[in-house]
Image (cartoon, rainbow, N blue to C red; front, side, top):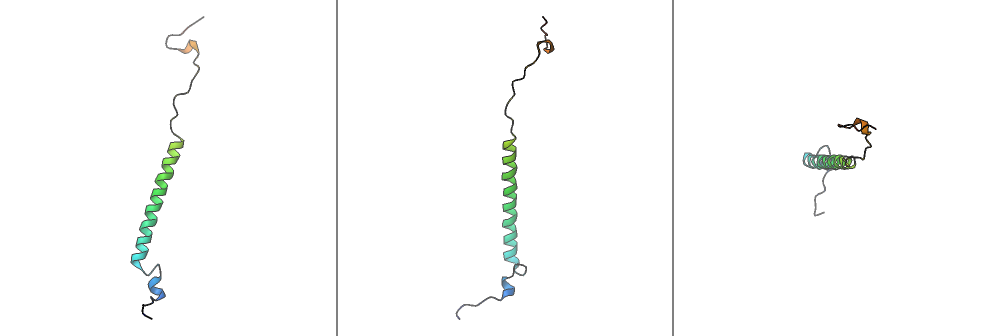
Length: 67
């Protein structure tokens, strides 16, 4: 064989520090982005939609109107 086969120990996730740290870094970035997108979407759904039309009785105004 012209190429070297790696031992199963070298390919193990817990034994290869470089591959495991790279995987954990990208996993952390992915989870952070997912939380940011999810939180932004939640806030977008709950956004302020404007003032509603509220019927205020005439006798409770600053200058009340009586009959």
